[in-house]
Image (cartoon, rainbow, N blue to C red; front, side):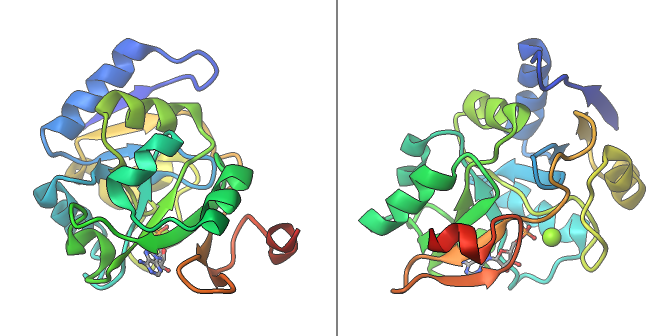
Length: 206
Ligand code: AMP
Ligand code: MG
């Protein structure tokens, strides 16, 4: 396994390209977001997605969040995006809010746990955004911990859970928020909070 240190305030794009090569091979990468560390794969690589579930010992019916880097990425994975969903996204992204939207057929059911919807967010972390941009594909990534264990807020948490089973770890220091994203279903009216997290109900009501 390899551990790369990438400084979020001064991104080394050679290192970003190294990480992207690993993702293109269909291997998993542990990388930082502002909420917690994620264990990521190219959303469109089914074999790599299967590796996430194996590594985490995650039940196949527990869908993972897909990370995008810009609004134009949204149409690659989601469809029928309502004006209200767009408004919420514009207000909270990049940030710790995950939207549930109808999925595009290109997103496999392995990602969505068999559902016809997909969970999407734009993380507020320069390294995560740089990785998605350089890969030119959204990155599916649940938290970088074994299923049932606390989420990794430091790279060492992830290393102690996965060790050599993961090819590459990207270390950018402690996760700023240290708490999962809030999940909101915007396919229903009014939208429904499915998981409480860093964005509060009061912030959403506003
Ligand atoms: P994480 O483990 O951080 O990737 O969070 C994934 C969580 O997001 C899941 O455990 C669900 O609670 C929620 N989630 C993801 N996709 C969906 C979906 N399509 N519909 C409803 N909830 C979802
Ligand atoms: Mg998790």
